[in-house]
Image (cartoon, rainbow, N blue to C red; front, side):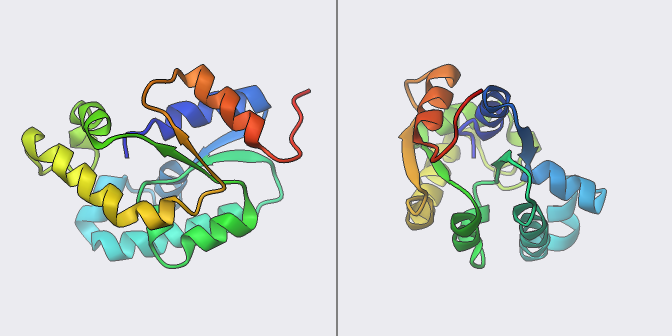
Length: 167
């Protein structure tokens, strides 16, 4: 959360000349409800079941695309194993303070953090990173993003993609 998956994903997709997909947008299209609405109406467990269903449908596609998944996606069920089986995965790593500073500006749009005080956000982020690290570190490669531009990050990702050649 807050690592810039969408911004980086869109830029990467443009450079690769493929479609960009955001799992949250796909879920919203599938359910005709916003992510905050789904959390409020159904709770996190029901949301994660829907998320998994949409992830499976997306991964079964034969198209080339860049997919941004939510920070919790790799943690639930066997989602990370499925991601590993179907695609090349990237963990956009950063420190909790950097992420918290970015998230403060968009708290109201994020149901997992909307209720938190700004002072509590760095601790929340650090706790989640610690709890999720084992899942995130299963990614095919990890990229520290804290001091890099979007262009530097996307160029580095492209260098790590197996068998993908820009035209």
